[in-house]
Amino acid sequence: MGKLSIVKVRLDREVNGYIVSDASSKEAVVIDPGQPAEKIVEQASGLTIKHILATHGHPGHVGGKDDVKAVTGGQTGIHTADAKQFLRSADRYLVDGDELEFGDFKIQVLHTPGHTPGSVCFVIANHAFVGDTILAGGIGKQTAETDLRRQMMSIGTKLLRLPLQTALYPGHGPATSLEREVAQSPVFRGAGVRG
Image 1 (tube, rainbow, N blue to C red):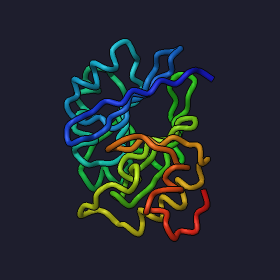
Image 2: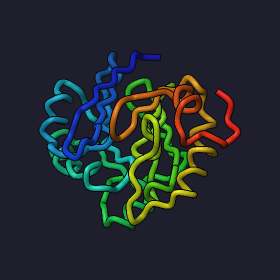
Image 3: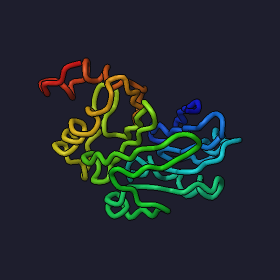
Image 4: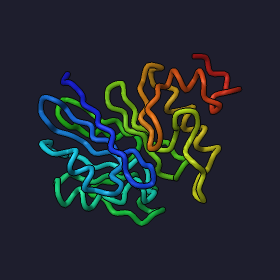
């Protein structure tokens, strides 16, 4: 297995975009292509962008996708439910269980509805890019389309099945780990979860 490189790009609206690349092949994926797209393109210099993926359809997380695609030629992807909810187009409409490849790595798509109907997490090796499904110490802010009960079910049925050592890269704020969140986050209090 190749070596994975993860670069966090701070974008408008305090969104974290990520460029995840295979160090040997220089193939990469952009996760949450917000604005300004130029920051993403600049950080991705020298890489071959295979996929441009959104964890959900909120503007801060997809606003730069078309500009990044125009420069890099990567294929865009968003879950079908958020494509419909937010009238977003993509080259590929993602569903739970999809696998995408770049270099020696596979991206597993986990549909984690709640923050939005089409929220997804992307799992690459022992790293999970979780958008606003879960943040360090909490969850993403609630909006009109948020279904909190469904979001908590997604965390319990999808994210808690990952190994506790899984690193979590949220759409806002610092990175964390599943183990740290289970032990410390109020999200898990009273859920009967053991760290």
